[in-house]
Length: 481
Image (cartoon, rainbow, N blue to C red; front, top):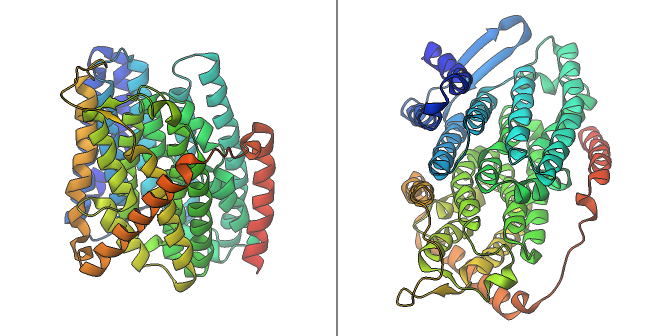
């Protein structure tokens, strides 16, 4: 298993190189890699014993692969497979597929890292591959958005690297556990790097523009898996270092509320989904011990929503309320919206119930408000008009690849619903349904008629680095307190 795990980490980079050599088989090679990762991720649940690989004992360079990693790895595999299927009938070049698989491999590597230095390498490779995919259209807009992402990401990783060096200087190891013996500034520097990479709280306000302005399949990958490369190590550290668990939970609650507040008032579909990615990251961090299951559910549903949003006739909710969409697309949109709202029979229900049961008392009210905000936000999709089947179609039929991708992701929501079947009790069913019902009423009676635009001041490029500095001061104060 050790040899297989190392090969599994290395193979995506090899396949990415081979795609350049034999571009004729780019789609087949990319899909094969996604299937291989799916099989590997599923195998981790069949063998729940943690696999620990000490690569450099004296430096604490360690890989840990266990069921927690399995949830994140399986998310990456399924989302990548869906994106390859989505792009199958499009004129994407071998360059696109090569970068997609290199990104896939580096994200997998991040989900296996248990030390700060190998995680740093994985996160930097992720930044480069993500930048190349964001800038793939080669338009002025896409290049600017990509460079903005790369600059913010690399600045954050400079903070992170200094913190990693301080951990090694204090303990002689880069292992996550060494953070407990490191000086407070090490936690603050590493923390600000991961907050930015994971799109957490105000440090994640680079995310809405980046995710909303990228091409549809790239948005699906960024929101479904890439941001989780920064979230996963925070979840792992919260489990390894109990003294930092309250801080991680606090950021989880703050992130959930901030993201859903923006999402409720957003009038652009892709920006609403991007802000809601910020909010759902908060749910993962709010209960680290069950964050893996929530990450899998969110990755499937958010990727499907971005793919469906790309098929809508407009990005404006106001225009969509006046232009009925095809019924088939509306059904897929509603199923995904039901799942993320916590509706029974979909994995979002079990993930939300399990998360709520794992909260500490001071989190409960805030996270229930975030759940209510989620129901309000996705009511905007659920109550959009659609074209009845008996009327002649006014829209071009969607590509087969689109339906394969969406079916894979939504099918995953039904399949993973059984992971926490104990959630199906009368009390657990009534509460989410009541929350969804109240959310719909608030939307229909109040927010649907409200015209309120939140300022985008903090999203502006010149303010993003300043926010990093403020978060660094906040983290330093929190760890001292």
